[in-house]
Image (cartoon, rainbow, N blue to C red; front, side, top):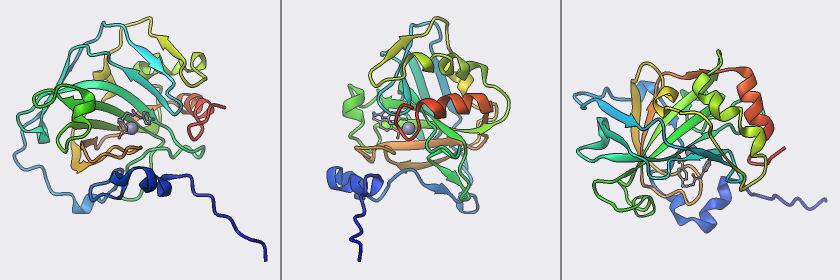
Length: 234
Ligand SMILES: NS(=O)(=O)c1ccc(CCNC(=O)Nc2ccc(Cl)cc2)cc1
Ligand SMILES: [Zn+2]
């Protein structure tokens, strides 16, 4: 008999180091559209982002991330009560090579990728780190990405990826970028109380996942995949 050693390195081991991962409101989830209740009389979701401040894209060792460096922005309304949230960073999950890298699924269907705009509650907390530990501390706008036409705003990031191939690499944008242009035209969304989708998996995120996917070109998906296959640079 050949001894079978099962090396578990994925989410199943996260509970060992991050007890939160065993929680009751863990993300991502499958959105079962038939079970979603209508939003009723929730106020509209409102956002405002600064466009002309210098931004840089960094390779944190997985995916890529754009830090907002405290520049002014606001997200309020919808499921967020009377609190005002501020954009901290945004990043993209492209996942495995089969082009189904989204974290959330809709009726069991995965998408090619998923963009996350991570905001923190400035009405109640004094820093992102503090807010990230509180049940109402964070709000993440999720945008599902599907292969279609080229996305011009996202291309301002994608075209920089060849310059940040190694963990810790960072490159500054040479042109203004408006995060609002990364969002879909129609702003219908699903929302639920959840968690960070990666360690420390803290249950501090009000998830707001837009229903309408945003189109990116096959080349843009390929460029992301070839640089970040399962978090490794290839
Ligand atoms: N995937 S989330 O929005 O729930 C999320 C937001 C913030 C954190 C805390 C900071 N860590 C971080 O940003 N990590 C990260 C970045 C890019 C990718 Cl692609 C994967 C993980 C963790 C998860
Ligand atoms: Zn994310």
